[in-house]
Image 1 (cartoon, rainbow, N blue to C red):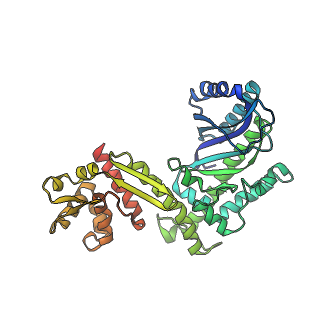
Image 2 (image 1 turned 60 degrees about the vertical axis):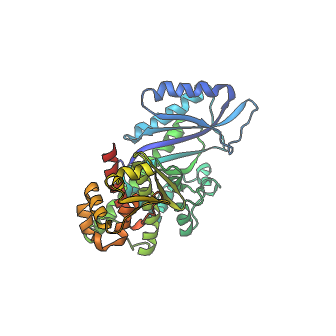
Image 3 (image 1 turned 180 degrees about the vertical axis):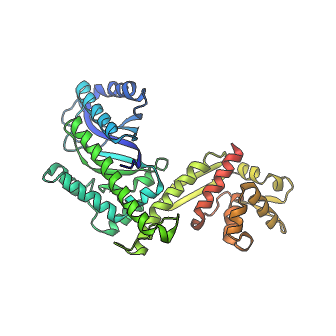
Length: 375
């Protein structure tokens, strides 16, 4: 089996006595986090959980774990469930659900998982595995983990819409630094063994169907698309629909990559929301990039940008190409006859540059080179 899931984020909903919360968290940190088995142990309240006694509180325990071995990580989660149940009286009831965030090892796997075919296959395997078990089957009609009724539901969720579906792609929008897909379909667990089985089903099933669909698409379309695999399959869906769904996920992942790289550079801030991505360059950052021209007053500040004096635009562009080591890209894009690509480079002189989504890969390369220069 190909291990395409790199790590798992756990949301363990449950109920425990108020007086045991801090001790329970300290136990998890001392026994598991200190050994590197899990990380980022935290607790939160969850208003959807119904407590049964006045001395109890609802709780959602969150943590992350690497997923290099699916069987071992599932066993670890089952052990954690049993340990906090035995030591601190933690338990789940029917108001609880078990959500897990999966971080995948490649952008293309997010795309394959986002296709309606893959989503449908996951649902089918879930129905086959838990056939006749109402606790599980009812999750698809639960308002917190609904089924997708049609393609518009999938489209809405993948554009940061309603997150309450059994697979939630809106988590990519919420967790900008971790880019996860959330599996929300699992119900409450009666013990650690059941929680272990839930985890293993999620990991193995997602791994299996995504990898199979990736290989199928790769074999069928490698000859047509070369190494640039966009999987424009028309077998089940129109090319237009597939492109549309892919764009939702692809752009979002590229936004997050730009954010992670650009914010390593002093003087840059990046914001991602449902409207897209916005970048802010401070004056200090711009002066550092264009220092030779600012110091000679060839570039000067005016409102939200540094303007270039007449007759120096080509000179500044040539400087940027050399600074960023963009010689091959400048030739490929025919830089001096391509005003759109010029605007990508010259956007570095603006406090609030407009982002051209047609050139997103170049922003990643551009900020990577600047991060190296300014490290």
